[in-house]
Amino acid sequence: MGKGLIILYTGDGKGKTCAALGTAFRAIGHECRVCMIQFIKGTIPSGELQAVKRVCDLMDIFPTGEGFIWSEEDIDKNRETAQRAWEFAKEAIRSGKYDVVILDELTYLLNFGLIDEREAVEFLKSKPESMHLIITGRDAPRSLIDAAEIVTEMREIKHPLDKGIKAQRGIDY
Amino acid sequence: MGKGLIILYTGDGKGKTCAALGTAFRAIGHECRVCMIQFIKGTIPSGELQAVKRVCDLMDIFPTGEGFIWSEEDIDKNRETAQRAWEFAKEAIRSGKYDVVILDELTYLLNFGLIDEREAVEFLKSKPESMHLIITGRDAPRSLIDAAEIVTEMREIKHPLDKGIKAQRGIDY
Image 1 (spheres, chains in turn purple, cyan):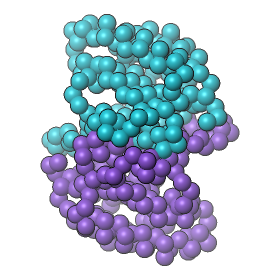
Image 2: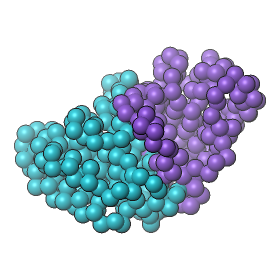
Image 3: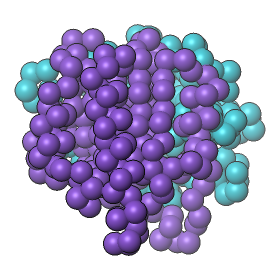
């Protein structure tokens, strides 16, 4: 696959995780092995999880989170989980088992101080040469933007929650 | 699936088609039937096409284009192809066979005047009630933004083509 890139999808708009999943889908078509680690998403069965179970032996998906983080209390509750998940992610990256690794919503771990930003970014930069790394999440810190080769900001122009439309199964999760 | 939404991914950054594909992947996990019509992409076997062939009976994907449009001459050459593709897309939308329809890079057809913007947007607004419609492409016209419930602009912050890195199989196509 040539040189592996670090790709970052950030911003407040819809489409960050979807873009990562779509890239995974493409990569699977080229017989690449894909691993997705979800840092926030917990045990609710998502479409992507069920799709992977249904159709694919080339992709692994690991929801490691405990749901969305809303309060200071949540942050404390999530610290240990986050650190375990990060160690797990590092193992997956080092293992050589995957051509593409997705770190879904990793930025929250950095922004809430759940893991050390500097250590994390240095580790990401030392990833295996040919592996593509895709990172998603709002408010990516500067150091992560600097480390990435491709950075797209998803800007919210319009969102239906503004109009009181609920999250949709098959679209939002 | 409740009320179907019109979702628009526009802007100059990477991730528009990927976001559409990722949404498709999610939807498949929920047993939705998905159709993707690619207006620009032609016959080069893309990762998404091979992924769909490999793994999935719930998704159809139709590349109808003749490759990227660069010149006035290309626009003329593409007019008939584009109009045929648009008729095909309308059939797919009307057919009732799909829960999610993706119109990949439709905005180019509108922006180059290959199909009539007003007619097209009116048609999209009259889609079957429960169907989700996902539209991608740069420079979405105002009328399309108005018609959509969710609009995300993918803004390019950094792109490796700036640094002379070539498009990557499994990531870019």
